[in-house]
Length: 466
Length: 83
View 1 (spheres, rainbow over the protein chains, first blue to last red):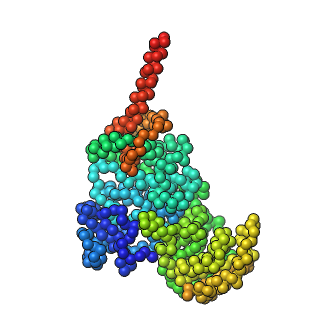
View 2: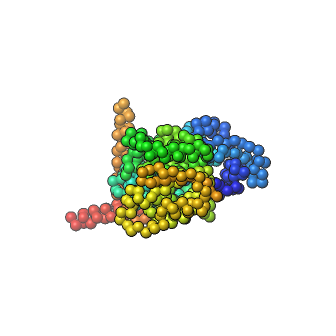
């Protein structure tokens, strides 16, 4: 949950700031952005994008509503609150790709209305379910005939390069992106690229040459260029061509390691007939039906089977978390195809997204954003307790801190999965028993209901936090 | 029809020359890297935007081109003197 007051992520652009007050989201428009704001408004672009759900709605309101924080602002607008704020380093490959394509689409449509975007930050794109939505109304400004695309470098580093990292080398962007925050620097990517790739026209002009030229340019040349910069022009037709070619290129990119994961292909090979699975579904379904939660956190979401069950049972929105890239990709495609209010995100639960960025406040850690009403942790805890040596008591403390209600699955040591995990290592987990599990859980929560759902002794436990 | 294919042909030709040109200049020593972020990307856009950009890019490499030619000619002269 975001704290009240000034949103610390909105300091970069002097055109306005974002404030949270009484759970409502406001954006100020400062005098320096006033002309552009009016121009863009009159262009008709915003209404068009709002109608198609491509940009978050903006309602102009009385500045007095915001009180003293509105001081100096010429306009105050209110946006509806999104169910969850996510960051590009939590997105799966298809999510980042979808976001990048939407960005290009918006930039192209803006140009057609004499408007352009002042930057190309991936943080200005959010998701509602698997559908991307642009959130920064003040990034739009008047397009001056012949101006350059100033967001090109940012677009490449925040959208294109992370996708190339995966599609060329099979390296998922998430961990690197999270560390660097501003994306994958072209300079770094260029060092990895083999010659053959560097000579590819698209890679050459978007990634390699900008780095080469940047290194080449001298102080004198910059000073000289700065003088004549205003006179030089990027013809609109070339601008559009750059955008279109990026769009075409990106839409064809796919992960080098997992190929094109499509949910429909998976569905054909997946069996749903198992009685045990049906048992588990019923338990989850009953839990959700009785609670009617708005936001559910599904830890170890895999390909979204239980997220789908939860949504069907009446949950409003599900955030899925997993570290398996292939599963996330399938889950994302599934959410798209079945139009689920479900967003699967990358998370290593033993190392969750931290607070980071400027003053460690700009981008929030997972626990500061996930205000879940309920969690599902199915076939999840043993991966942390056995796989990552997290002590059971700490693990249950952490899990129950995420949401006041939830369903947790206990997998006994006799289960084939744990046997497999312990195959090549010493069993140092004397503490890992069902009895201890239940007693640790009972020290922080009330156990509402439990049920054994498999012949191997897996048990589902529903809790309510104390 | 003919016109477009000729344009396409020329485009391809320009691209090939461009790629070769860049490739030959690749490993030249880096100059000062005082730069405002994004200038490299603007320079590429200038290049894509037309010939005006090409002149600027040539300037980036001018000293080197000059040196290469000077070397080449002085070699030739040495050769002639020997002959």
